Length: 447
Ligand code: ATP
Ligand code: MG
Image 1 (cartoon, protein in one colour):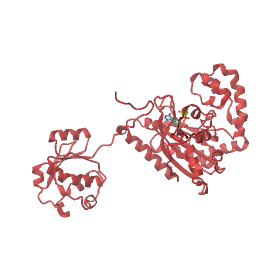
Image 2 (spheres, protein in one colour):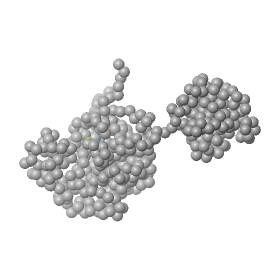
Image 3 (spheres, helix red, strand yellow):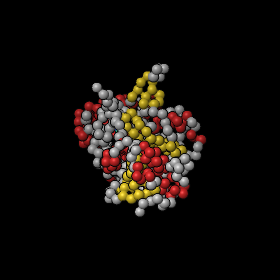
Image 4 (cartoon, protein in one colour):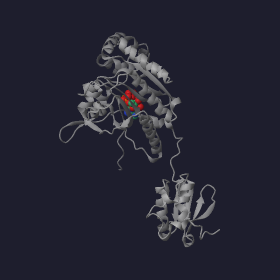
C-alpha cells in the first residue's frame, strides 16, 4: 500500500501555488511599505518557550502542541505560533538597541494538534507581524490598518469585518474575571462541558467558545469594557480615534478576548462570513510585559497572525493557473540543437518556455501545446532548418509565419510583452551556434 500524507497535513499543489505566491507577495509588499523587515525563524524551539510565551492555560499549550524529546533528551516543540520564537530571537540578538518600534515580519508553517476540517489543519501557515518597543496607541492603529491594507491589496477588503476590543491591563482583568464568574456560575448548566471546566480554570476563554449552546449565555455576559482602568480606557479610545482618522471601519466587540494568556489592552480579529465555522482569518493584540516574562527587557509589543490557508480559500478559483507562453517543438535532434539555445535565451528574458526534445511526432507535440495552453508554438523541422528558420504558430488563430531562428528569441520576448532587446536575450554563449549577431537580417526568409 502507498503511504499517504499525515492526517490534517496537506500538499499545496501546483494548481494552488499561484494563489499562495500572490498572497505572500501582497504580504511582503504591504509590510515592507510600512517599514517591516523579514526575520526567518526555526520551526522548533524548546518546549518551555511556548509554555512561558503562550501561557499554560491556553488551548494551544494544554492540548495542541507537537512535543517530543530529541535524542539528547531535550523537550522540543514544533512551533504552534510564531510570536514566542520571534520574541526569543528579539531578546537573543539584542534587537532592543535598535530604533523603536522594531518592526519585524515572518511567515511559514505552524503545527497544532487539532481536529482537521475545512480551514483547520495540523500543519498550516501564518504570516506574522510584530511591532516591538512602542506603547503609543498610534502603533496599534497603524498595525491594524496595515493588516487591512494587506487584505485590500488582495481585493478582499469588502468581504472582511474588523473587530476590535480592549481587555485592559492584567489588574483590570482580575476584577473583570470575578464579575464574569459571578455571572456565569448560575448559568453553568447551560454551558458546554468544556466551558464548565473553563469556569474554574480560565473563565475568560468561555467568551471565546464557538459551541452554539453557549452563545445565549455568552452574549449576555458583562462587558470587559466596563472594567477598564482609566489608562487602559484612554488607550483604547485613542486607538479608535486613530482608526477613525485613517478611515478604517471597525466594530467594537467586547467578547473578543483571543487565545493567548498574555494579551493586554488592544485585541483585534478579522472575520469573514464566507468560510463557515472557521471564520477568523487573522487576529492579534498587544502583549506588553511578555518580552520581560521571556527574560528580555521591559519592551512592550503588539502584533498579529494571518491564517494563510483561509486567505487562499477566500481567493477562490478565479485565478488562472500560470501557463507557459510558448512551446518550442524541434523535429529531430539537429532541430533540438538549434532550439535549445533559443529556449534558454527566451527563459533568460523572463518568458516561460517549454521545450520538446525532438523525438515526438508533430501532431502529438501540437496536442501537448493545446493542453499546456500556450499562446505560441515554434516548429522547426529539416526544411525550416535548411533555411535557418522556424515556423511560429499562434495557437488561438492557427496562423503561421516563418521567422529566422536567430531572431526568434527577441520575437517571442516582444510578443509576450516583455519587450526585451535582442541583445539581452542573446547573451554570450547563448546565441545559436554559428549564427552571427547580425543574423537578424531577413536574408533567407521565404516570403
Ligand atoms: P481559531 O479560533 O480558528 O482556532 P485561533 O484563535 O486558534 O483560531 P490564532 O492563534 O489567533 O488562531 O491564529 C491566527 C490565525 O491563524 C487564525 O485566525 C486562523 O486564521 C489561523 N489558524 C489558527 N489555527 C489554524 C489551523 N489549525 N488551521 C488553519 N488555520 C489556522
Ligand atoms: Mg485555535
